[in-house]
Image 1 (cartoon, rainbow, N blue to C red):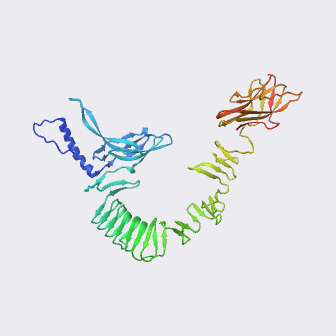
Image 2: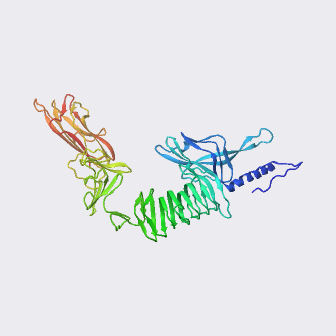
Length: 564
């Protein structure tokens, strides 16, 4: 605290520290009332707007927790390029304003030094997981996508307000609060009023409230403490989390036309509630209601009546009871027990499949065979789709398995063409039995062998991805010679000859003047590493003038690769 100020007199010798002390005194006296009686926050302006990779703050004023004034005379832009998230992601930031002093205006005459202090407004953007910078005021919450687009949420803006001192601890606080749709004053602390109170807007009090006169509120009323009223009361909406006692209880004494949330309500006279949420309702006299109409949601934790109660006609848009509720039964054993089917706007829960089954379906698919889920009393469970419709199994709204109406199953595909079609790798730890051994096969193909060098025969080539196991290569082709001679066949893996002419070859001879047709079988066991490999059938003629055809018109011709 600065408790001395300069006293001037003729002939006084002043040094720079004297002027510094003078400024310190006046700054202390200026900031101290704001620190004690005002709440830090925005006083006016400082509206935040977003654009590509930046935000702009309009001119305005705020007060920080130390009572220092932060004044922005011109709009100020703040670059957010460094905060852009990676592609496809979003990032949430909080924008803060804080006070900053910067020495400026360097002297051009006399001693070297800065002649002024420049009071500035400093902007900072922090990730939502980071704590608020010390002595700052929150202006907005920012959502930034990977393209640099910025969305501004100003409902979190901290506004300045009034602080009411008290003997010990923090006093009550009154400030504006935004909830996304309206601005309203919020009073945090206890409030006692001895005269009449009339409010045209909403009232929110977080402490106890006592009103000795009449309380009239045309807006919403929210009290987190106890409410005690000795006069007549007319409230549009009353929300009280503490106990509530009303001593004047004629029909005009308590009239609630909006939503009401009361922890405990004690009424000795008549009560009319249009929309009510009660934790406990206690009525000490006899109660006769020919009609109870509640137009809003109604929650009753406990209904206790010491006299007789008659309800001639009850119409509730919503009823919540903490005990068991029975519909179609007078002895419910669960929170809600219904003897019959349940139908909502889009769903139907029933026993259409028979009395031994419980089913769930869409209301427009109520046929006995159209259920979505059915369970028998013995625990047998069925998942079903309507005739002609697919059955999808999803995770995070993404289809992982599909069953078509014809029984074909697809994993990784929604349009399977076989009984089971898998788009991806399949891992089996046990034995797999199948009706055929084809794993990867080539198409039937024609081919001509006329060169003395190794060449691919037709289109007999297969590509297989292995997990390190041995690969069995099977070849079955039919050849017809056009001239007598010797023809050699072998297997290549990725352009490397795996065989030798004596190990895996077939020799064809022409007989007489007619062509010689033979079936050429080849079998080879390879041991490649893990990876993807291409196997080819290649052949060559013994001499340059020899000619041979691969002919698929006589029998099935194919090349198969199987990982064992």
